[in-house]
Length: 262
Image (cartoon, rainbow, N blue to C red; front, side, top):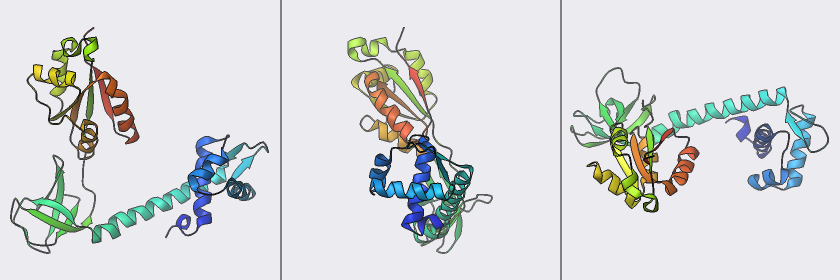
């Protein structure tokens, strides 16, 4: 196990160094204490240790900076955590987890098969040159669902694209002020469509497109992107900030298009 996880002390030192590096030179010890579930006095003692070890410097006025040695220690510890997480994911969890896939051939129990993600679904087949593979836990015929264990390698998956199309509320003209030609162009870029608001639904119907989802479009966009599926979300303008906040918190890329006619 990585050193950072072997004791509460090392874990706390790591977290405090991260906070100092992120907020230097101003560190609010009370907020850090609350997030870590310890007292401000404990944070103060940890910081004194870090200063004594040469990982942090202070000007004596509650202003702290991480040193070159501190950065090196933080990077080394983070690398250890990354290696440990990879071992857990690839060598431990993959052996005890069972993944569900669609069989693209008749598969026998114990076969090692290739795994591909297409259209948001996992497929098991006998293709060569595929990096990801697993073991069939019970025989399955082509087209059936099949259980896969002992996953190895990485399943290639390109993150889906999200296009947010903003339309005005009815008080500002609603669907009558939507650039329908621009909407058609955006719809051609993705296979799945969601909408938020009556105005968005009517605009879609004007171009002959029924949405794939009306309720939960925000979650739909996130899940679709994670599964490699691109989507267009047509939304009334007041819903856009909430969607953007969710996408940014998930680290997903998006394009915002204003369809309001000038």
